[in-house]
Picture 1: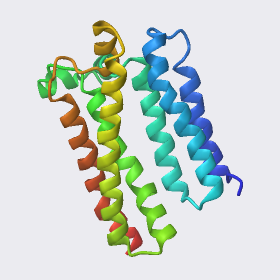
Picture 2: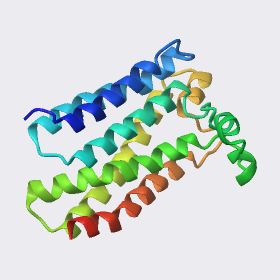
Picture 3: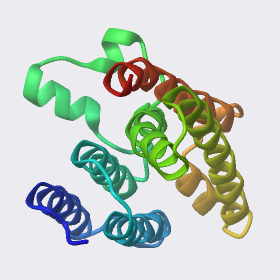
Picture 4: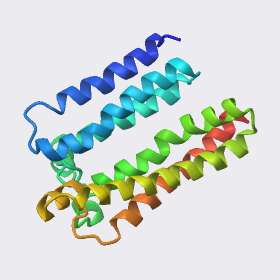
Length: 203
């Protein structure tokens, strides 16, 4: 099965963002560690879509997540200058408006993971196993939660092999001992928010 024009445009968008974020990288080693997942994700996405049926919208959401992840990887999550961007574009500071004391772009990434992957995972499970949408959503939610946990384990395993400075830059905890817990919670909340929409469109 070949990619249709909509999927090709979505993939081109993700690849373009990936290439752009590698122009004069600030932290090549740490960005490379994060980007390794991006390459695996893009290769898997193309392979999966060619082998199995995948809705255009599901495909786009995964590409959108990968694109945002590429931006986060360039700035190592905790250094993404979203506050400066908002000040320049809208003359508004999220940090001041919400009283943020840390950079929350990493939180956004984990939240988007739940939202963007839930449709693709749920629809794949439903079609592959020919089960009701409710059952597919329950399984997909557990997979999102489990994959978030495994990612945090992998992140920890990589960090212990780096120097303390490199580990902090890679993990982006910003001094928060509950960072991993919050990341997993936000991914779960993102997936939960997608459930009503998926029930309505697949009911």
